[in-house]
Length: 288
Image (cartoon, rainbow, N blue to C red; front, side):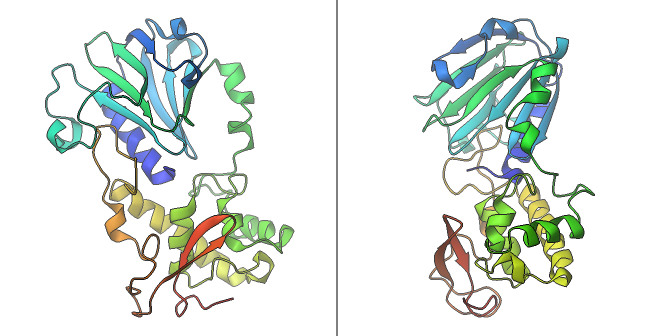
């Protein structure tokens, strides 16, 4: 599932090419992929592209927002009208998705400029929800989200209190809880815990307060690196130009079980924590 860096990469790509564009037509190929009347989009101008946690917000005039959940396999791909070079120097020949629409295309937004935006989703867990200002504020997903990782509200005291409240839960499950902090998923939780030498299965109540500040620092560091390298393309994730990210080349533990640790050379292991496949170094992070 795309996490904060992947979604932020898509946001930045769409920001460059969508803002100021006006929708001329919406074609829905899978009815459940779009919640709301597609006619609401006709003639609307895109004013901004936002992000909250792992969700994208395509903000339009007259108070309409398209809330986009990519979930496991969702993709938002912008195609210029001439099919030529893409934003950021990418070119269609470099893309993972070569034919648009593809068999996984669920929604197509045609723009007055002749450009198009494709919402692809192989496993159909993703969605686009059309919301006015009043309903956006009350949305069941957005209203429950915790602070962004760089927010002052994601503080040492806040994370330490969350650990103490759920003292028997693993520290990894705390980081995955979107009500504690928005945007962290399996990949970046594993990476952050490795960089702070904390075993992912450590009970949250055993995390000392003095460990919290370095942990928050590494969370922010690894998320920033993920954004810098365009996210992790482990499976279906591509950016707004349909191109693969490069963060997978920078990972220390995620997806590297059976390989030597980049720090100490010990063979990395994989277990299951918080219901998710979890990667760690038995020497750098110890074992439970």
